[in-house]
Image 1 (tube, one colour):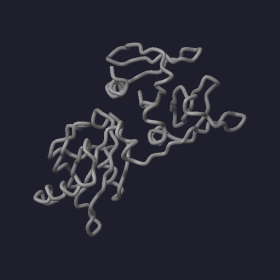
Image 2: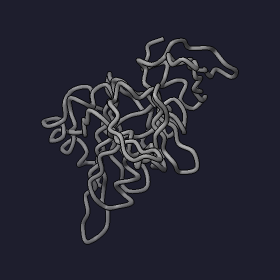
Image 3: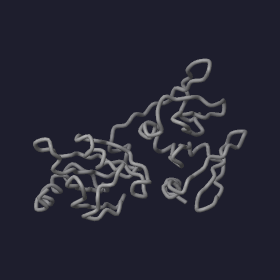
Image 4: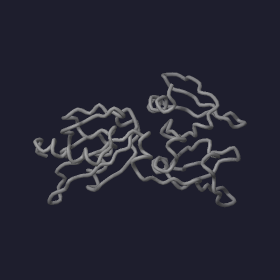
Length: 223
């Protein structure tokens, strides 16, 4: 994209994007402009290549608008990105991404807000209230909802559940786990700046917080 158009584009974006949202503009391969906000800063610099897994990358790949929650492994902090590619004659000319902090998500995007998830065991299906879910795990492509009454299979992947679970109640703490923060009894320090979460069930189940998610986990809980 012609960089002389950036101020004009940003002026138009500023009229529809709320304060506290960062803006990134890519020419398809690399970022040509980045405007951080007070709410979230991905530390992007003009000339940086578009990172695999980012909202911009996803939009460039499918050549259409993408709204996606992005894990902390991509930029070091999780965020919600809305990316819109500008396509001319079948080719992406530029891509504009609005970057929201997860705390801003409920106010700026429409997302599912179910009161329960459906779990399955050998007897059939069971609606499970969100507050009854202690944690969610994934192993070999199988997602499990863990409650005080038992564990139940669920059809969604963890990536899909990232858009469904209440973001003020569940936090990603590991590539294989989401935890209900209301179910945490105690946070134990572990090696290499990681943690073990002791839950409130009778078994005092322990769920790991990996190094990749430790920073965003601490930010979410404020310690």
